Structure formats: C-alpha cells, structure tokens
Length: 526
Image (cartoon, rainbow, N blue to C red; front, top):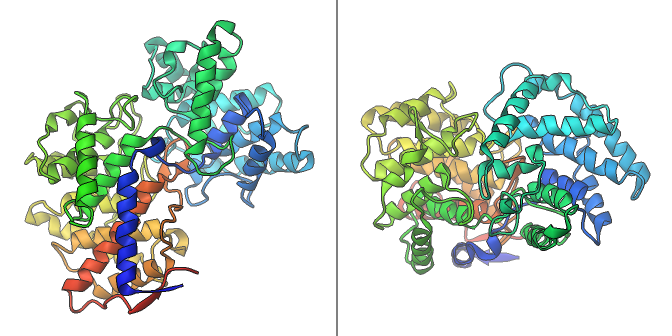
C-alpha cells in the first residue's frame, strides 16, 4: 500500500495519540518472557493448554541451543536454565524427542557461556540473577541435570549471603525483594499478595507462591486470586497463549511516566495534536505521586527511574511538583532505582539529571558520574535496566545538552560516535543489523545534540528513509532491549520512542532547507 506524505503524517499522529490515550489500560503491555513463562510452567502450569506453552518455549530456542537475545550474551543464562528445568518437567508428556534434544542443546550452550562470567560481576547482569541463578542450579542438581556450576562461582557465596539477608528483612508485598520471591521464599505468607493479586508483580514469584500455598487448604481463596493474577498477566503479552507470561505486570505507571518523558525529550508534550490526551495523563500521573515518589504501579514501592521520569515530564509541562520526591534515591553522586542494588545505573542517573536541571538544581556531581561511565569513543554502554548503548547514549546526551559550554566537546564526541555507528542501510543496531528501536534512540540523541553542536544532515536523511521503509502503523512489536530478569519490550514505551523519532525528523524537514523532505510517496506496508 502507498500513502501520500499528508496521510503518513496523519498516521504517525493518530498512532501516537492512540498510545497516549491507552496508557495504563489493562495494566500495561509487555512482551513475553522465556524465564517467567518457564518458571510458571514449572510451578503452576495452565489447567488447559500446557502443550501450547511447551511448544512456545521450544520455538524460542535459538540455533546455538540457548534462549534469550544473542546480542546480550550475559542475559541468556537465566532464561536458558529456567527453560531447561521447565522442559524437563514435561519430558515424558509432550514432544518427548524434541524436548530431550532441546534440553541437551541447552546444557551444551550453558557450558559455552563460561567466558562471560569470568572476573568481577559486570553492571549489565539481569535483575536478581545473583540469587535466582544459584537457586536454579540447586534445582537442576536435585533432579540430576548436569548443569555447569564452576563458571558461576562468584555468584554462589553472594547468593547465600543475600538470601539470608532477605529472609532476615522479611520484606512485604510490592517490594523489590518480593519480585524475586521464587529464589528465596519458603513459606507462602498470604500477606505477600499485593493488590494486583500477585507476588511482587512477577509471574515467576507468583507461580512459585501458588505451588507452595496449594498445600494449605486455608489459603484456597488467596490461591484463586493469585491464579487470576497469572491469567491477567498472560493477557498483557498479546500472545493469546494462557501460560506465556511477561517479566512484570502490572506496569501501568512505568508505561505512563516513560512515555510522557519520551514526549518531553522529543519536545512534543504541548503539541496541539496530542495536547488534550497528554494533559489527562499528566494530571493522572500527578495524582499517582506518593510521598516517596512513584513506582511502576500504584501497588509497588516507588523507584528512582519512574520518579525521575514523572518529575521531568510534569515540570516540563508546567505542573507544580516537588523535586524532593527524588531525595531518597540520591546516593554518592548518582541516583539509584532501589535501595540495596548491586550496580549503579548511568541511564537512570542521566534521567534524574534531566529532572534536576529542570528544577534548577546543581547537577555537576551527576555529570561527573555520567562522564566517568562513558566509553572512550563518546558513547554510554547499556546497563542493568537496558542493554542498548543507543538508549543510554540518548539519555546521556539529553542530560548534558543543557549544561555549561564545557559540555560541547562531550556532545561532539557522542555525535561522532553515533554517526560512525550508523549501518550502511541508514539504521542503527547491534552487529550491523538495524532495528527500529535502536534507530529511534540514535535519531533522538542526534536531534537533542543538534541544539548545541553540528549533526551531519545526510545521517539524519538516511535514518529517516530507513524508518519510513520499516514503519508499520499500530504495530507495537519491537526488538527486546530493556532488561529485568531477562530482556523484554514494553510495547507502548518503545513505540512512542519510534513515533517521536519519526515526528522529530519530520519537524526538522520543515525548518532545515538542507534536509531532504519526506518523499511524496512512501511505502509503509511490505
């Protein structure tokens, strides 16, 4: 199908307007998680359709034997070992030969992963891996699976200490420790269920709790609530397979705060085409602010990332709010997501730096932290919350762009690195394979930097043509680059990034005569 330029512009705005209007609906949308699906299959398989879940799990295995995104190798051990354990539970039930072969290939893959776990623990490991992976290794040993142990030697003592600390703290519902309850929980306390009906907003933790709680008849009502939670969480993936789970749910405040912050980055918060739906979401988000900030839902403890995103968007839109909401997350020159974290996040710190600058605060300590974690070529690497360097670099550039004049060399270095990393087809992505989301991040970073330093017009032209060629209206499916227990995609958030990048490029064509306009006709469908 071919559309005219005007129709394309209408499609982009309608697409973005729809996303903003639907924020928080159904608790948010998120891609399926191999890890959480596998754990739910082990502990609480669907009463009907388990064969479909097993088949889905088998389909996710890569040719190298592992599960998870090959572009982020250290994130693959957790979903691979969980998948192996889940398939082992059904080795005599469904697709027996295929399951046995998948298990052997998975174990072989894990042995080849040893090189990624040498030396100190890096900053880009999945959330909770230090307690979950050793627990999975123990489970594998109990059933006689020969999973490799030696390569995870640094995790084992850390896991023991952390599990003991968690049990001693006795964390409650809606807390970060509850999110990984399947790794340390032993008693199914009904007080762990939050108002979503689940444990820690996590399907794996909830499924494990259901398995243990099912032994107690007096917990029948709570078990029923938790099972309802799993059914609701599965619907958020859009897979239409009851046992296929996301890595977290609900995520409605996370979805809302990050989309609104993305609009702020793109300069579209007050655009007349979307002003009414944006204002409604801003007002709703302001009502959701708690004394300690805002979390990824109203039932989960506040965190630094969502709080920074919400404050930045509210302040940029002219709402009366208080930067003190961020106070409890400040820590030695950077900003944390949750207390007790192992690794700092430079992407979170950059987002908080943007928020603080809008309130007129001195951000020099955060700037020092950001520059310390920058790569020599001017980019920022992925971290514990996101694996893509393009995302981290976007936030780094945006945080720096409103600083003093001495930031301009840093911006120039980042721009040079982004431009050099552009693939021959005009997009950005790992290993020369362009993706829509990486390209959107890169475009928004260049657009932000262009307010202070020069950006090559032909780089933006190439990016615009690539995005136009790959634009599919209302198709929310993007490559998984966000990191939790494994990589995932928050569909509405990433689609907002992509639409904003395309609209920013369209706006630049209207004001920069050196920039090629959108062609009169473009193909938006294959």
